[in-house]
Length: 183
Image: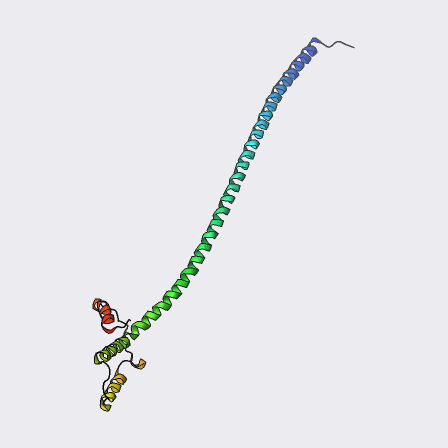
């Protein structure tokens, strides 16, 4: 075997130095890459933990909101039930008041008849008891007057504008006392 020449040795040494530098460079780059990968892995683990915590927080917030909305829904349903029963009660009251209003309208329409009846009763009380025989002509006149009076339901005038005045209200007590009747 022949020994290599000094040029070949120099070239081989230069080649070994270049390979060594290249290996050192690659090892350095490998260390940097491993450090980067490790840092990225740690960063991903931290981000994953943060995302899991955020997801847990969102999930808990969602559950709290669902519970709050469910409670609010139940309260709203209770309120609706209360309002429905109140409306039903008010409808019944309206029906009662409507019936009473119709009765009052009928009473107001009948007031002229009642006034005529009271005036006839007053006149009869003033006349006192019959002491003798009644004149036939006088009896017919009274019957004719009653027939022409407003006692007939067919002759009730329209009294939609009727209202009691203060004098009427004051005279009611007087009428009850004078005639001994109650209205």
